[in-house]
Length: 265
Image (cartoon, rainbow, N blue to C red; front, side):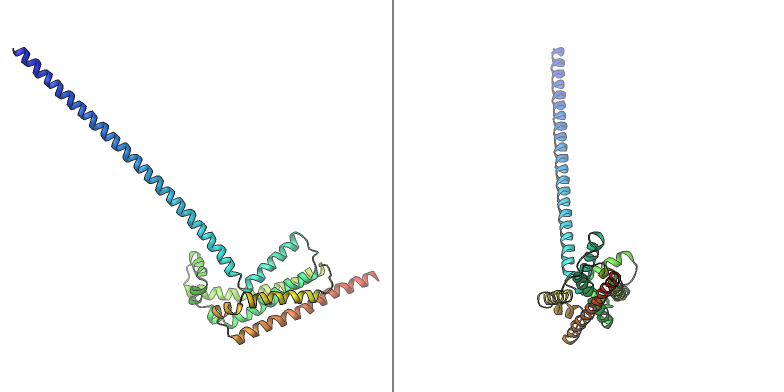
């Protein structure tokens, strides 16, 4: 009887132990499953966040690229940027591809650069009290302050003053350099009929586009606070300077022709 009772007790104990083991195994399996699901959810979340971060970075880069392009387009509303771009393209073409281009192209490109940059330097000097203020750049060119503040430990006022000073100097120096080097390019250019007339017509077309299409009066009234009278005087000065330069260029070309005639004869 006691043996039977012991067997039953043993059997019950084994059964409970087995059930307890099964429950433990089931809990472990459940925990492992939950841990796996949590890990997968975490990985999915991290992957999603990484993808969103990548997309956000790409969108930011596209936006920055668009901003740079937009900035370049906006900058080319300014006459100085336009003529410097024309000048650089002309020099690259002449020096890298063909130095024997028509004289009227030299007349137009160099005449435009010299007349506009020279008059612009005088205007900038006259308006120096405006362009040397930090507030001016905060309103019209914040990227100037942002760029220089990254690399030099100057106040906004000091950066504005130095940038304005350098701008005046660069405008004047570039016009003088162009005037000094133009003789070299005129002498190697091909002579064309009506070079003066074609150059004058190109200048008129350029002026028309900027005055009536680009509306440079509005551009410079805002940025430099030009009055209508100052604007008209500046345009007149550019036109007179350009006309005088055409005459000067033609005398250089005629000197070359006279020299060739002397050598032939």
